Length: 213
Ligand code: G6P
Ligand code: MG
Image 1 (cartoon, rainbow, N blue to C red):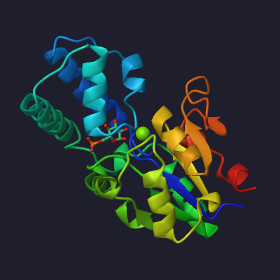
Image 2 (cartoon, helix red, strand yellow):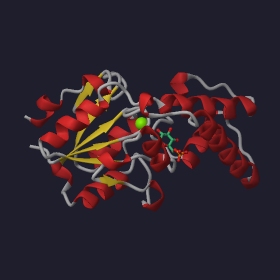
Image 3 (cartoon, helix red, strand yellow):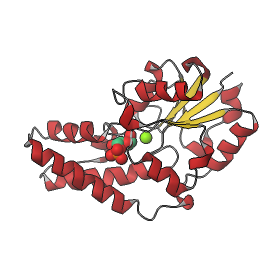
């Protein structure tokens, strides 16, 4: 059975995926581009630079390096404003119970977010101390869908990938988990997260006992 659960953050533990969407949509609109929720699916789990590149590619736009940098800074400022008031109430229902159940059974808990704001967000949510290891998105070579962040967290936990279960809401994230050689739990829609080994509609509905047996 598994020895650790490695969680994504945005869209798995809290609804910050919605704030990323709002901020990227504002960026796209500023560029005169449409940006739907469907477009956003492809951005989930993708790092900041990669996300902007996807938006520009889809709109067949190119901008100068300076403009690119400026758009990244503005998006992040907007995102930080949107998450300014988040607090423990913004945790998805069931997350604390899930963590408690894992701890009770000696299962380690890791965090594998692509976000450079992850440490700030888990701090605001009041859950920073519950993790045995928090991955650092800034220090891995390749971002999701590459397996790097999940592998670095397994290593940080002192475990091999086969002993870990990854939990993700993003297509790129599920691919990262599978490339890392881990069992993949998808949070969302089965028709979207086709590579996941099992999918639950929400984190709160995730059946920890079933996954551990
Ligand atoms: C997560 C989110 C993405 C976001 C990425 C980078 O993976 O799912 O939507 O683009 O983190 O976040 P950052 O906070 O570093 O811009
Ligand atoms: Mg996510």
